[in-house]
Amino acid sequence: MTVNAHTQASHLPDDLVDTLDKAFRRLRKSQVRPPAGQVPVPCLGRQLDMAKIFACDALSELAESSSSVSVKDVATALDLEHSTVSRLLGEIEEDGLLTRGVDPNDRRRTTVELTSLGRAVVADATAISRFFTRTLLSEWPREDVEVLTDLMTRLSDTVHERLGLLPELARAEFSTTLGQGYQDPSTPPAEPRH
Image 1 (cartoon, rainbow, N blue to C red):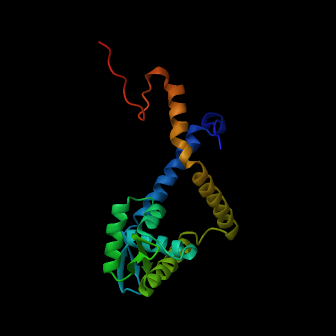
Image 2: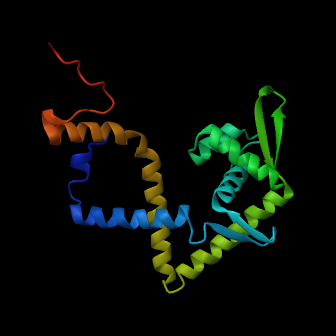
Image 3: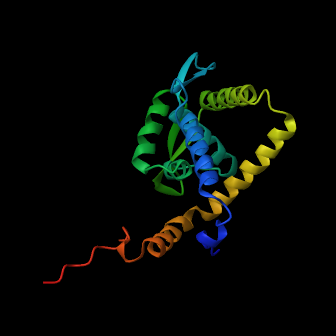
């Protein structure tokens, strides 16, 4: 898909785009780091860090479509480094929420699977998320929530389709706008001539 950022978005004024971007940043902060940083999980009888909940949730979703899930699969789903996810999954394993194994078809591949307690954590986290979402939107008419859901789904699909194009579009846009003074960070600086 070819997208020309300038012509495709020229109908969107800066103030509108800035307001939307600020709203995204505020939402992102609340999603990634909730007020307490941890969420109460009834089946554990204690709170659990959001990163662990996100990892369990990703593992649960992956397991729905695959009989074998690897550490690399979870890292890809979370868009994190393999080593970071491996450490995180180690902590989750210590919590008794998952087990590790070896793929019988590829002995080099480490597989991960939620335990029954891990699945209960995902169910509790889903129930808590539903509660928070319902509470946040309690004063919104159902029709507005349906429109928001349709628009957020559409936005998510568009982001998924176009995210990979952004670096190329940005280079083209900045080199056009800034002209010769723009140094593309993906190209090495020119050697000075003596």
